[in-house]
Length: 88
Image (cartoon, rainbow, N blue to C red; front, side, top):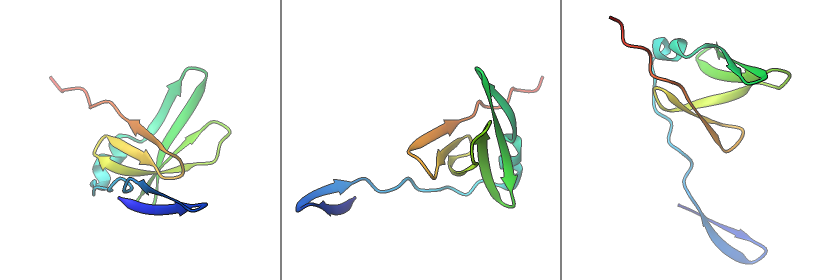
């Protein structure tokens, strides 16, 4: 926990989520274009960094908290991707 002060009031903030190492091949599996109602979200790699970009918006950085769950660095939000379908 992180202690913070604002206008003489002390409060405690939770620790930021811990990033986990995810192999590049696993990151590549979640790249692509996802249709979200009336907009699209492009998920792509920029070097070793996974990014997401909604139509007409700036890209955001995704930090892995598991192989299929990512925290958006710039805002307090999380993206979860579906597990790949089992091969028969």
